[in-house]
Image (cartoon, rainbow, N blue to C red; front, side):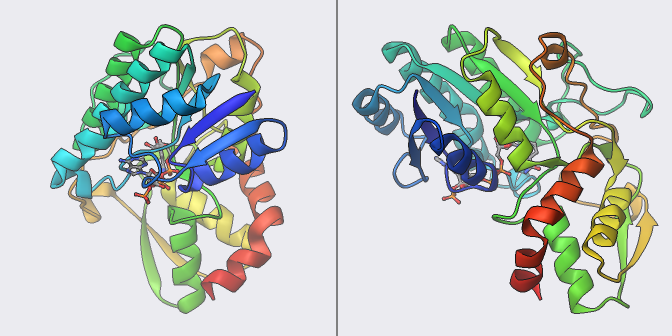
Length: 291
Ligand SMILES: NC(=O)c1ccc[n+]([C@@H]2O[C@H](COP(=O)([O-])OP(=O)(O)OC[C@H]3O[C@@H](n4cnc5c(N)ncnc54)[C@H](OP(=O)(O)O)[C@@H]3O)[C@@H](O)[C@H]2O)c1
């Protein structure tokens, strides 16, 4: 299969590129080779390659910066998916797009999870721009798959777990406050890449939820990861109110992969197993990189 990947140098794009390249013809583009906010460039690259599938891993993901960099956030997260959907349609490509748990307000009780058809109500500019991207795709593409994921980490780029590791390695006695009242499912980019491969030609369209199973708080996830890395640390649980950020985040970010489960297509494992596999695959390299 011929597959075009946008955002191919991000933490998810990197893992998707490596995995899909094993069995497919992959054209993986960074933001210079394919700026998804540029309609003419998208048209030109899509027309040139005529891919059967486009996987959009590109986004403006700096959640707090989106509050001030609104124009850029909407250009990448809303206009970008629209441009890809329009061009995909002209050459008959299937568009697989990655979206987010932050389309929800998180007000559901934390012993429940969000389903694909639950009401969306983003709290942040990032969530609003990503929701606009979903809407544009549903309007312009006839066979799209929108995969909402959450709390991603991988060995490439920056993420919460790598930040925790870097700080713990720098000074294991330094007390770090970590939010313990937001719940979600830490999801390894490699697992999401495997899930993308598994739906490339599957008969499923519209919106699906795509995260590791089970849930934790940021604090619980950080402790589990640092224990698995066998690195000493001093983490203290705190509330969201004690750790204010420019963007509001949902308290409940737990997504249930209902549609993938029902279709028998899910390849996800628990968030703990995901972290164990991540540590096994990249633990030594992470220690080298972040020490
Ligand atoms: N990270 C999370 O926790 C999380 C949670 C839920 C959903 N998601 C979604 O998962 C997807 C992948 O996220 P990620 O964590 O891999 O993000 P990431 O590491 O920040 O990668 C995003 C990539 O998009 C590229 N990009 C930015 N503007 C672009 C443009 N105009 N045209 C083309 N590429 C552009 C960036 O390239 P440059 O560096 O060159 O700008 C970067 O390589 C995104 O859709 C994100 O919204 C992420």
